[in-house]
Length: 636
Image 1: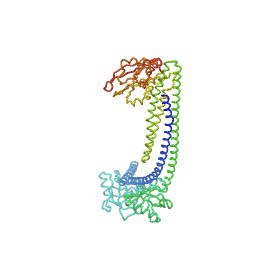
Image 2 (image 1 turned 135 degrees about the horizontal axis):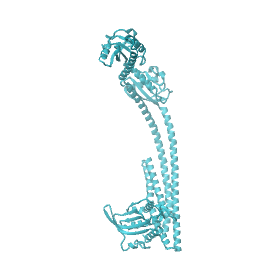
Image 3 (image 1 turned 90 degrees about the vertical axis):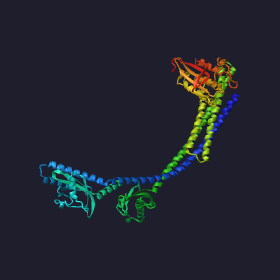
Image 4 (image 1 turned 120 degrees about the vertical axis):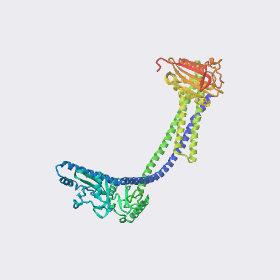
């Protein structure tokens, strides 16, 4: 009966899991390929959309960065001019001090002549800047741009607003103030209009005169503009992606084509003139985007369309812009889409190959393990039959009977433990199809489902490995970890613990021991199975496993809260064929074989007693099995 049941289970394990895995593999692979194709189409659309968005954002940022730079340079123009004038005067003052120090043997007029010769030809600020010298009585000593005025007095000279220029400077210097003086005066090339001018002056005490220089704010501002244009011209942009500047009057201020600079839009062809008029109109209103057919301004032929972002700069009446060519953008998008398509093809191929590989490996693992189980069962069954027929040794016969009993329980455990992961795999596949039917399937769902299936198949394989390792025919003692042996035992009966709601707690230590590992696992499983079967109506079902080490023994204790063993039979539990269970549940040889293994194979001691203990403020009573394994000399 048992043999037929085992073969029935093995036949089911041989056919059903491989078929299920193949079916799931086909379904999952098909959906992955389908979803990947949808993802490719969506990404292609988003790629074009994002490229356009990014290109518009880039020209927006570049124009605003250019404006920020201009505003930074424009900010405090007057303060920058003042600092420049002060530095110039201080430089000249240092020269004068050096001349006076090096020519102390000369009289005042001779020293002044040397100073004039030294400063007369000095020019700065694009040739506009020069030094002037006046006596503290208002007499002009040095005026390089109008030598004929040297020697004349300027105390009564006023600007158009009635300010006495020379008197104001002398008054300030007599009060020991080195301050800036502002007045309005004519430019050398424009004697019709006066412009705002700032000067800085410094008193030369030893010669009773002062030196100074000045500049027109408007002229200095033009220097700032040139600096800005030079700076923006120095940047190398991709073809067509340059900064251009116009003024509100239609003059082209900045453009990579130098032939266009300082030209007015009226001199251009009708189309470019119309485009620039639209650009100026947007700049005067504030800011905005404009798409237009580009020719001269874009250095391209007809049929090329450009999108530009334009923004006005009120301070200088400038209109600043930058654009990108849609034709170039579409070519870039097409190239990236081709790369995306190639990558998608690689991904689809990889998905199919991985699916085939995983499916093949899983089927091989399952068939291999099922074949192993079948061979192992045939081997065990043959050995049992031979032992029964030959009847050579009673202990060996009992041992095989114990193995067969454990085998039956183990196959039941495998059937129970495989049912849940197989159900998980089926549920995951159904969930995947359901999400697809409701159009809510995404990459994360696919990845999560695949991970669940892989985890479940790994669990199935591990169950077979645990069974195989337990029934491995060990002939020679080997070193193994006691803690791992206990953990393997718990893994084998874990489903029974879960089904009976039993809490198992362990206090284990790592200890290497040389013996037959599977024999110890069989003893532990026998004791744990007895403890599990002893629970009836107890509310709190507890099992504790502890390991202690002393100088002579390694002590393994297993206690439960099942109420204990009746005192009138506790001394008989290790007798052969003695059992309190129903015939369908026990043979009465488990504990007998456990004692045989511990005493003969391990040269140790196994015993049992009833005990009481406290756990989480509650008191419990149960049986406590103790295994003392001798610590051999030279043990590891």
